[in-house]
Amino acid sequence: MRVDVRKESLSALSDYASIPIAFSTSTILEVKWIANGLGGVRMVDATLDQPLTKDFDEDEPVEGWHSLGDVSHWGFFAAFVDGQRVGGAVVAHKTPGVHMLEGREDLAVLWDVRVHSSVRRCGVGTRLLDHAIQFARVSGYAFLKVESQNTNPAACRFYAKNGFSLGGVRRGVYAEYPDEVQLLWYLDLRSTSPRASGQLRTE
Image (cartoon, rainbow, N blue to C red; front, side):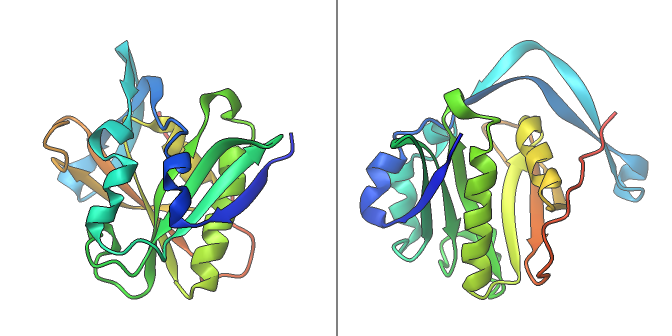
């Protein structure tokens, strides 16, 4: 399957939002602290009694990104297969209203990545990630950061496989989802070598 990734402008945001970001999972990563965190963390695959479905656009609609400030300089990418839009990715940077940037000058954030359910696990996400990484690197950033949750094991494994390192594990971040754990991933862009392929170790 040939995947064509194109850089877009802010004017295509409504088309970008037409790709659903919702996902369903029957497992989560149960986060266990070793010695109350002093010994690190351990992640254990846990099967849910009922499948979980989440739609991030319900909590933070694409149209609301404008409230964060000027986002016209962000990196917007769209993926197409046979001329049909099937996915997208966004890199946020130089925007004080984005707390994920931590006020740092050396950090960009993979703000959003979405792939239509009909072509997931077909390489579309990897192609989008490649373009996002290249954009962040060419823009002069040393690190690319992305947020996930323990309720999205597929995303966690995707980032780990593509060289991201887990740099933050935080409970109690989401008031509306008190049982979820925020997982923050970082990719070092200063290396010119290909991204390391790793695995997220769970039990």
